[in-house]
Length: 262
Image (tube, rainbow, N blue to C red; front, side, top):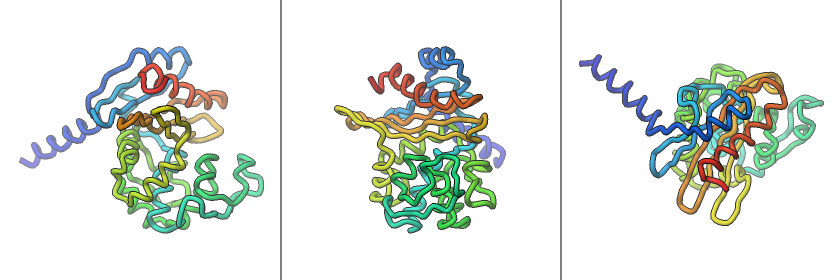
């Protein structure tokens, strides 16, 4: 009896992650043309339907890198590590940071736009290991593993998440469906807005594991079109620094061929 119950739970969990998947030859052609190994997933939240390229890779977990700044910001707000997204967090990184624009005090609104690692490491230390672990589990984010170093688990591991898990998480955030205050979720959505036009809004965040060395690059987010929400996640192998720009280029092109953006 227990054996059959375990099997049922495993099948149910797989179905929940896999959903209704449609492979897109148009998106596959974009990756082939760009010479990129990676995956792209578009999730229609209302229809509970996925379309994309390379389903197997889409279900494979990778270190989230700076895409973790999305749940990280929400956790910081929830525990009161910052009162709001414009509260200034002191810069405590290197005197000569990896990116020059990082080297100053700033709030989360600017820090997420600049993908400022030292600011978010300071935020993580304010949150603390115990509370961080509690909230990562509350969000059911990826493998929910943060190890014993609170200021680097999203950069070096052990935290990992798949593209499919990313779009499910982002779909909930877009609809205000995470187990956090509506005002906190709205504040996070506000600082993730990249562009908008007549009848649509584009939200997103990049990531690059092991930057500036070879690693896995991300671009994740969602598009709102009226009442419709389409969350997306791209990850790809970055073999050289010039590959980094392909994250958003390929992601945008994929959204266009799938008729979510024009």
